[in-house]
Length: 477
Ligand SMILES: NC(=O)C1=CN([C@@H]2O[C@H](COP(=O)(O)OP(=O)(O)OC[C@H]3O[C@@H](n4cnc5c(N)ncnc54)[C@H](OP(=O)(O)O)[C@@H]3O)[C@@H](O)[C@H]2O)C=CC1
Ligand SMILES: O=C(O)CCC(=O)C(=O)O
Ligand SMILES: [Mg+2]
Image (cartoon, rainbow, N blue to C red; front, side):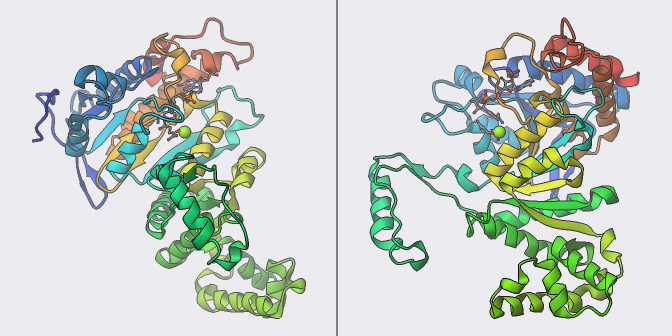
């Protein structure tokens, strides 16, 4: 057992361990929780009540969670002293018990400490941030058909600019780097021409690795294979037209991973065009097939044309027998979309998407935007998953203006707990909570955020704590 300075694990309960990336869960697991800053004071107690009620109702005392309070953020500084935002005790506890759940933690803008939320993901290598955005019937939305959106943002969680390697404008290292780049590295790279970095720039580093990209896409592919046939799709989201060697590489590595490790189970969008061209016109020439998949084909250089014909030929040689004649329609579709386009696509063609595999920053933006369509951040759960640890947390932050008022929507943390219970294999408890949330919303028993969007508006809205009770009441309705 770990040694702790200021906290004591519960007397009863056992550890969750991991083997081959999967949790082994005893009937009485100890689960550390971080209450969180800001509205964490409201959300956590409400959510805990729902989790305990659901587990008790589902398993009648056979299973029970022993909660282990651990500290981070402002609460940690109060207990452990100034600047002790993420005490060693907390890290030890999460490491020892494997699965944890947390409320939001504050990150100052422009200076001060770096994000504790991001630090936890990096320390425990929680490389997949999974944020489902799914509609609950009756939830008000600014969109006409929010029920059409059912996507899961699969966000790479450990690198990109979130690695936090950057230098302030005017600092010695920023100046050194700018001079090195302007005088040496940029001139040595012909494709950069005579570009120069402004001397008064701050500098940030955006590393995107093959390993980081592929392990995220691997998890996304495995998830897609567990979905119903019509949702078996992974869309690689990137801005690779502009950032070719980072975001473009993410796309290329994603396709490479899918078409090697999952060759029998997937088809890329481009492959599907090649195959269906041949299905519709069995005698189609390689060149006519190439012309149809690349609309600008006739204006390309001879070299580029030969390359596309080669692509058509190798696809047909490699997968016609296994994927042709419509067999590809039963495989996981892997496609890619440019990041700005996907923001409008999830609004204009929501039902055409399922799993959205993204790099860190794009996934951060996209998960808030997708949550807005299905009712807002109060309905946006999340999970940070690694191979030996998992930390569940909502998509939103501390919402400080609502802190301590018992008014914020705890739905997102409650739904994060649903993800946790499902990850633990406690599906019956998870299902009760989903039913309870659905029942409460359908009955217009909602907090201010949903109340103000409903027609007619719900007045007065439920408090945060009352919403938790409404969810419990609707477990069996
Ligand atoms: N994982 C984490 O812990 C995260 C932490 N943060 C941190 O949180 C702090 C505050 O960030 P901020 O930009 O204000 O973003 P927040 O996500 O905290 O809040 C922005 C707005 O979203 C709405 N909202 C958020 N949560 C809920 C909820 N549970 N129910 C209903 N509505 C909700 C509220 O809108 P309205 O007032 O219009 O109703 C709120 O004012 C920052 O320090 C930031 O760094 C941010 C994101 C994630
Ligand atoms: O850590 C933070 O303060 C913000 C992180 C964030 O917005 C997110 O992970 O969604
Ligand atoms: Mg965010």
